[in-house]
Image (tube, rainbow, N blue to C red):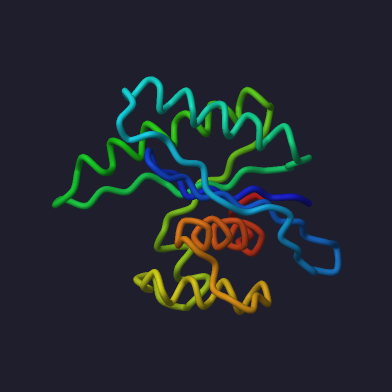
Length: 161
């Protein structure tokens, strides 16, 4: 099974494509970030996200896309709105490709990986490096988050992965 984990964002979207063998062995096929030009208009940025993810989903035989659920902090509601735009485009791109989508809460992913639903970015990066046997922590943290989302999708029985 091949899972694509996504940490959505309007400026930077982290992605990770992992393969899981029947014996449970995992390998990272691809991981990185898609970036948009912060000086561009919203529509142009959303088109760029659609194009980047369309290309990524066409490149790999992905069975499922796992994406972080929208969350909002009362101090930063604009962040949730901007993330929601990017998230919606990514889900629409996956739907256009006929790909099932699993939504995972950030706290669920953090708890699954570290045992703490409020783990820091650094703790998540270290946990991801450990789980995947990496010599260095994944940078930027958007990549670590995408790897964590894909890993959680595989490990959660209710995630349909």
